[in-house]
Length: 282
Image (cartoon, rainbow, N blue to C red; front, side, top):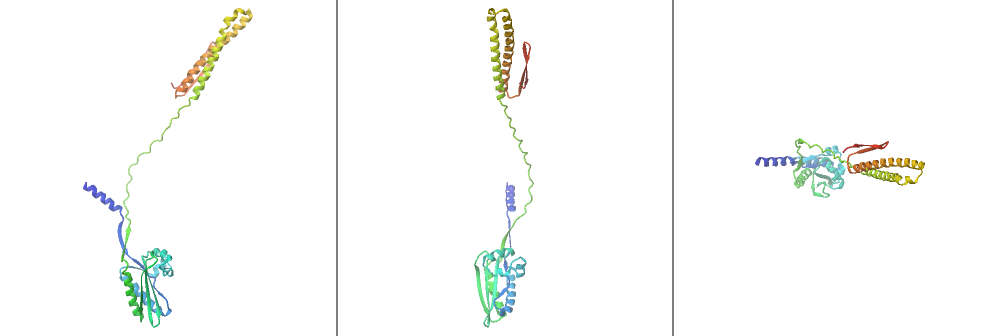
C-alpha cells in the first residue's frame, strides 16, 4: 500500500513543472545626453551604472544586445508607453532603467527612471546633481543601486519536464459492422394469391356453365347438341385447369407473402390438366 502511494506521489511530481529561477534582466540602453556639453559625463555615468547593475546580481541587457534583438533604443527610451511594453519582451527584459544627463549651469544633473514595461507608469524616479563628472557618476550609481533594491534579484521560471513516452496499451478491435437484414416485400405474394383467386373463380364459372349442357341438351337438335357438347367439353377442361392453377397460385402467393424465403412457381398447361412447378426455400 505504501509503495503504491509513493508511486502515485512520484508520478504527480514528474507531471508538475519544476520551478527554477534566473537573474532579473534589466535593460539599460545607456545614458541619454540632453545637452551636448554633458557628453563626457554621459560616458562616465554609463560605465558606472552598467557596473552597478552587474554587481547587484541582476543581468544587464546592453544597448548592443537590444539592437541585436531588433529593439530600437529610442523607442525603449519612451518607457513607460505602449511601444515600450511591446518591445521589452523581444529581449526578455523584466525592467528598464533609463538615465539622462544634462549641464545645469556650472553643475551636472542626472535623472533616473526605473520602469516595469507591463505597467504604464514608472516604479520610481531619482534626480541627482553634482559639480563634476566623477561626482555625478558616484551619486548616479548610488541612485541606481537604490532603485534596483525595489525589484527582486531573481525571477522564478517554470521549466517544463520532458516525461518519458508512455507505451500504448493494446487496443480493442473495432466492432464488426452491423448487418441489417431487409425483410422481403409481401406484395408479390399478395398479387399472386389475388390473381390465383381470380383464375379459380373464372374456372368455376366455366365449369358451371359447361355442366349446364346436360340440362339443355334434350331441347336441342342433334347437330346443335353435338356443337354444344364440344363447347361444353372445352369450357369444362379450361375451367378445371383454371381452378387448379388458381388454387396453386393462391397457395404460392400466401406462402410467398408469409414466408421470408424466395419462392417461385410456374404452371404448364397440358391436355386434360397441367403441371405446377414450385421452387424456393421451404
